[in-house]
Length: 254
Ligand code: KIV
Image (cartoon, rainbow, N blue to C red; front, side, top):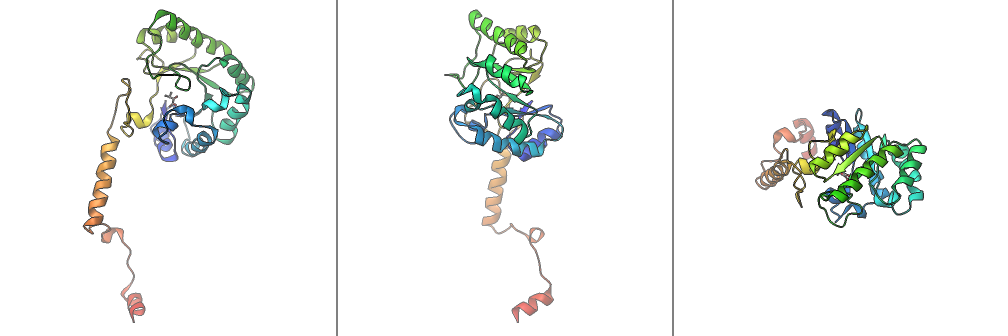
């Protein structure tokens, strides 16, 4: 699974055969330049999810429910999830663990909406971005949360920022798949925020992010080359310009 926030990136992920495209609420940080995911709402998420949907043909499309869609008022959860499915073309929605999780998951599932759960580090309510479940008591809680999400009807669970041994226990205790982010190799699948792994966003980089390519360097190279060629009038050259016939030019200039 990888994240996308617009049409061109979604198209590339789909063409590469990525199984699941997630329109993450990380939109807030990596696209909109906001301080955390709580600042992104339904309007922004739907706008971007619709664009992503236009680029996805084969992959499963999952919309990340923003905080305001289900934590602010859990009674709004089904209504908002339906917007992701019916208006924005999602196959499923993702929600993070929170105190009224059971109510929300059960209502969504009863409404026929596929739900991806999310435990461990849950950025919508976390005070600090740090590894979760390092202490036995906390680890037990996270195991229980994952098990409950399965019982309530989630089809899959994201594990964020948990130690490898905890990820292994959770993955082995569930019959639904786990998808890890900072959760070691002991998950059934992996997810990363795409601008992080492509090297397009580097305001901060958690330890688990591997930068697979340096897109930022390529973008900088392209921008500088454009600037230099414009300044030296080598761009646009004949290959990138249009001409008119001598006959028409004579008519125009006479
Ligand atoms: O918002 C997001 O991109 C996510 C992933 C980190 C799983 O929730």
